[in-house]
Image 1 (tube, rainbow, N blue to C red):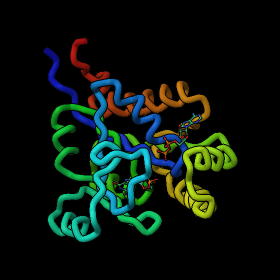
Image 2: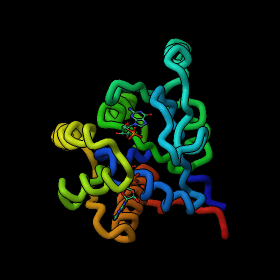
Image 3: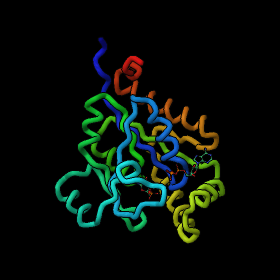
Amino acid sequence: MRPLSKGLVAVIAGPSGVGKTTICQRLRADPLYRWSVSCTTRAPRPYEREGEHYHFVTRPRFEQMIAGGELLEWARVFDNLYGTPKAPLEAALKGGAVMLLDIDIGGAEQVRRLGYDAAFIFLKPPSEETLISRLRGRGEAETLIPGRVARYREELARAAFFHAFVVNDDLDAAVAATRSAIEARHAQVNGGEPPARAPA
Ligand code: ADP
Ligand code: 5GP
């Protein structure tokens, strides 16, 4: 039997509202993929569930996790703290999985510096107008929208090291393009072998 492939961190970055959660949810139907549940100090949105979208924690608990070295990376985004728990990521990589991380550009830069085998994918909206209408459609407060758009421009300007830029217009096409960019990188870190999937 072929040995298990080396795992891969797949960083899915891009502006709030571009469709990162939607695309990651589709990829997660494939057992090769795992989802890193971040910790955050922000309040849950009405549709969000503890342990699924995020671990919602208090600021003192978040600071304790930083001090205890429990987070692989963390960042402040829009006045809240967000971080990636280290233990589940290490376990997933040991099992040869692709660990999906929906993190901001600062987090992506930290993952890069830590030297993980990683694919960096930046999701772009078809236009800023589309981004705004997706944010509105999700019920985002109107006052927050200009800041989200400004941050998108800043993040894009820092993303030159990313492996792929995928436009999320047609959802099926964007899922396919994201998958193919991740799996090309996965094959590259495994010496050209495609990812070893468990038999169906
Ligand atoms: P993010 O995780 O990047 O903040 P979401 O996945 O929550 O974004 O998507 C934001 C909104 O846009 C959601 O209401 C989602 O259903 C919608 N959406 C995502 N992808 C598409 C797409 N390709 N076409 C139209 N709407 C989309
Ligand atoms: P939201 O509040 O819209 O869910 O996320 C806001 C931003 O925080 C997004 O850019 C998202 O990618 C980022 N984010 C979510 N979790 C993490 C994390 O664990 N680490 C970092 N660095 N950013 C995160």
